[in-house]
Amino acid sequence: MSVSARATLRARTPDIYLRTGFCGPDGKIRPELRDAEAVAVTTQMTAAQLSPQEMAFTWEAIRAWLPRQQGVAPERLATALAAAFATVAGMIRQSNNQGLIDWCRACAAFVTTEADIEAFVEHMRAVLRLYALIAALPPPVAQPLPVPSVPALSE
Image (cartoon, rainbow, N blue to C red; front, top):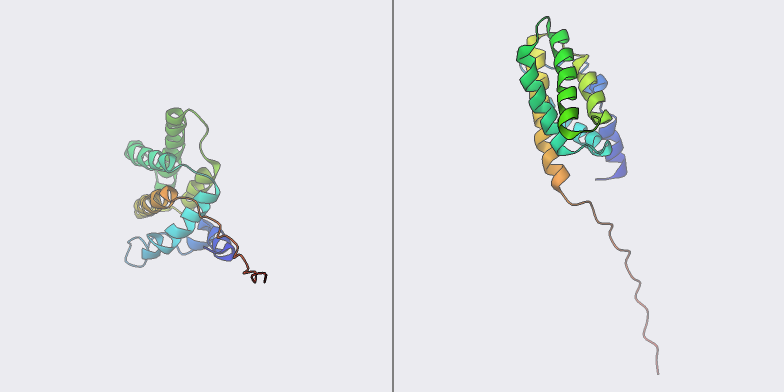
């Protein structure tokens, strides 16, 4: 992937791609949150050096904590995120990845309904699946410079 393509994907933050919300007019998750925007987020998580295990643990912890929360959707998600981050930090015995925290909180700022919570969880699942695959790839190898041919010396 080119440097400019990576820069473009890193710039596609939730503040940009969630301006129109998580759900389309039909009340379901916008399809691009499962593909194009998930690609952008994986680029950002790669730059943040997030481990795929921490992302998976966080997704599972959010799913575990959400049903235990009460209140309106934004409050429920904010409380579930805080509990999930604390749970995962305890599991991995280190601070949570700041890139993941920032992304989750930026997404949470756009949650207003229960459908948005479901769409956020689905968006994160799409990111997790793609990120796990990308993180498993070996790092790109720099292409060797071509060696110019040298004419043979005559005897």
